[in-house]
Every structure is written in structure tokens, then in C-alpha cells.
Length: 166
Image 1: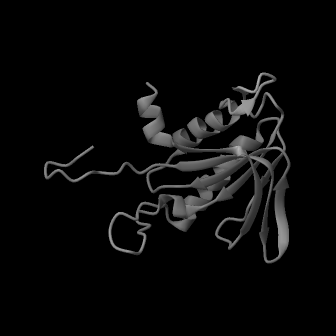
Image 2: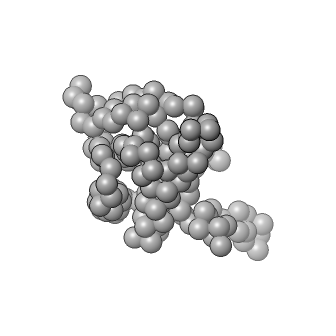
Image 3: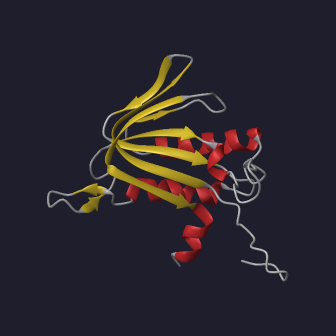
């Protein structure tokens, strides 16, 4: 989308970076607070205009995206199909805008109160499904370790993805 002056307008979005992993863990203060085996490491960035609708879309996408290999070696199975695990880590820097200057702008990221509420809502919705889950700690400095499987990494944006899939 552009303005009449030709400037690009960036849609505020909830953004995920999903990595298929053999294992992953998150630590804070030298203590492991979440870890998984085979599954998905999900980094979640929340924008100012994100809503429950964005969460519903992204939870469905994570559960059903066919990114695990079937016996033929094709990505044809979902998280639920392979009974894999999920580790969700909040990461507001996913909404960082690096287009101008040398310091990223985080103007499009949700404020901490809204961000935490939506992060928790996202986790709660994911926990309603039959899978082992772990999380990071919102607003904490975390060390994330993983063994990427593939590597297989996808970026999923809530609003842009829904609009283009119609």
C-alpha cells in the first residue's frame, strides 16, 4: 500500500519466525525455563494493531502447516500429524524497522502490556491442542539454543498472509 506521495505504508502485523528443530531450549539467568525435542521453535513478535483474529490465524497455521517430512521425504505432515512439540519465545525485535538510519525503530511493536497480553493469549490458544509445549519468559533476556532440522525456517505474517491467501 502507498500514500499519494508514493511512500510505502507498512501494515502492522503479528510476525512469526518458525524453525523446525530436532531440539530447542530457552534459558534465563542460567536456568532452563523451557525445552522441547522434535518440533517447532516459534519466535513471536506482536504489533500495535494485532488482535485475537491474528492469533487464531497463526495458531491454526502453526498446527497445520505441512513442514515435516513424510516417509517419502516430502514436506507433507503437520506438527499435529507427527505429534511434535512447540517452544514459543516472544521477540519484539521481529517488528524492528531497519530501513532508515542505523538504529532499528520499534514504533510498530506493541507496548509491553499489550504485547504480553497477546503473547499469553497466543500461548493459551496453542495449549488447547494435544501437543507438548514450552515457553520463554516475556520481557526477559533469554539465551535460546537449537538444533535446526534441515534447516527449515519460515516467516509468517498474520495480516499479509490472510490477505494474499483469499
